[in-house]
Image (cartoon, rainbow, N blue to C red; front, side, top):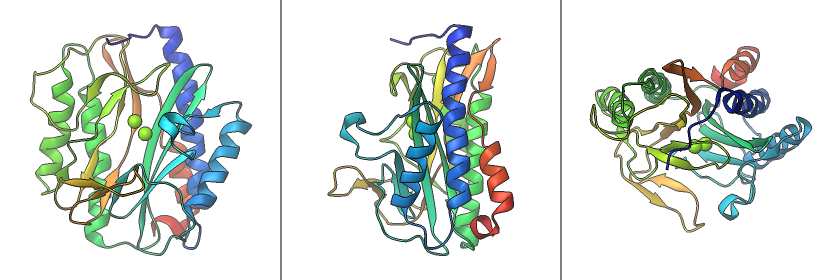
Length: 263
Ligand code: MG
Ligand code: MG
């Protein structure tokens, strides 16, 4: 059942989303060759708690950390480890927080220094596809319109759209109805209504759409081990239109000051 949110709840959820946005900004300041995902995880956990919030992923379904850190061919759900990031890597950092009983859930894929042009393009197109999906979040549309927009655009660049993992409703639970696939048909699926809040999160592979899970029981990798990108925003429908509750402004500012990150 889809739990629609009041204006008041949406404002509380904006605060939760912004906690995560600021946390990703702090993570962005620290992303450089040599830093380890585990170091980023500790920084994020401390920063979330400093803001009076709780990490949203830690302990959720028994996940062991604050961040999901997915490097290169890892798609999502990577467990932070102590392997230093290297120039040319990409890392998807997915972060959740709970504030006043509501979840924020938000992700960005960072480049470590100079990356291959084909991987840079994958990041750019995946980010663009997120906003194309968000544009479809309006009253009168359906869930399938979001997935269609993301799939049509990314597949036109020859990329693979992950099928098994999807976006989702967001609220007092991290994962609420409805599921929000990154593929679909126009005019199909559940109707989008005023007050719906969705986590929209394209997971787009440079090669095949097929994925596998590693033996750690969490990490998802591409079947062909080619790179994968992942960006996520929290979006409400307010006055019939998309209202993005999270923001990449903090990330963008941190990256602008940190040439080690995005070249
Ligand atoms: Mg997420
Ligand atoms: Mg999510």
